[in-house]
Length: 498
Ligand SMILES: Cc1ncc(COP(=O)(O)OP(=O)(O)O)c(N)n1
Ligand SMILES: Cc1ncsc1CCOP(=O)(O)O
Ligand SMILES: [Mg+2]
Image (cartoon, rainbow, N blue to C red; front, side):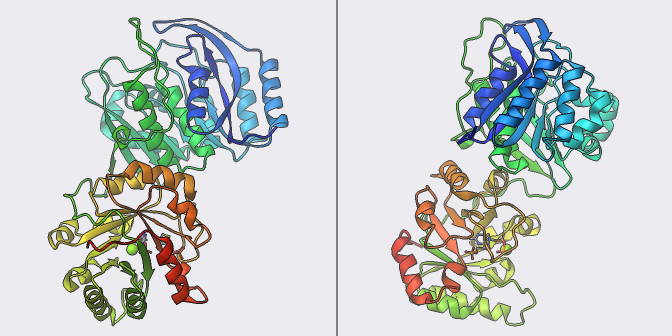
């Protein structure tokens, strides 16, 4: 069997109230463009007020469902594991993840303490090492994380929640999200902590009034699994799934009858207002707004020489970037000065990549900085000098971090494979570009970059992105002048406004 949507295998329990478990999983997975294949391991009778009973599916029937899923479907792209009440089905499923499903992305939500009441889970603690080795994103809530790690509150107070996350990473988990929404009314925010070997950050949203919603953990983990199936990086999936659950908590689908309403399911998040605030150690948290630039910068070539700057400005290019990667180039300051002079002569916008001190000294229109540069750059100096700031981002997580700095534009990349730069992330493709550009519409100007050529330009321009940046589409073409003319005709006009 084939599917237009990537397939997500779900091992979890049915909630007869429809708010949590496999029902929430299927809805959340569908909302994120994937298709859920439910392997039911138990059925439970629940309402919004209580858990009245639970009965396990036989190991034989569970194995049968698993075998059919593995043999009759083309490719499983991700797996979500929820409540595993029975030790036999837990073992069957773990064995499948270690063998036939080896290498498939797995989100494991270790449900021990469901907020609806205590449902019995199989012993996850003694299987923890096996579980973490096959898991891509592990999503305990704070009480579950403490119980599984064997930590008490005193240890948590001493070492902190990031260290608790690292406990699971050291045991083999690739990424961990510890959900902090269960901390009671004394805490005003729902803070989730993300930890992996290369990245740690906290996602903060206001705590919604009331007791929260039923099925929030299920919705989060299954949205994560669907997003991994759609090739989102774990950190990008994390911010989008958290926004999804927040939307669902603010706007539940059912009226509460005294119990906690189930989380609402409203499709892919299309508004920035649901996304969390990001706190990443060493990354600037906030900045005063930089001067904006026009929403449509027009064609935006990125070039490495003054000669290119002059040639392209003379052809009518309105926005250009000088990107010289050799910081020891003895002519660097001179090249920047000369390019600034040319940009003023042609009344065009010149951004300088990386070298912000020289850009300030030469009076450039703006600077372009990457995520790593932003950690150390003197943003206040750039802003006070009146320069615009463009920032590079490679997915939703960096987009949110960049946005918190109130830049002049946000570059979204890389869209297609590129040979101009070694990229640490995967190409985002047009679907993700379209989503990000729509989120940022009327918020901040956007620029698409990476592998954009005349043959894929129409797809890029079909999104709400404001401008198109490129290197080799012009510099490596057989007839750069003719090609530039074609690009200028196709890209929206860069306008007279500076
Ligand atoms: C418009 C635009 N977008 C992205 C980049 C990449 O900048 P950065 O991340 O700083 O990487 P380098 O260009 O320095 O390799 C850019 N320069 N321009
Ligand atoms: C500098 C940079 N940043 C993200 S992709 C990229 C390279 C763009 O070059 P090309 O247009 O040749 O793919
Ligand atoms: Mg740079």
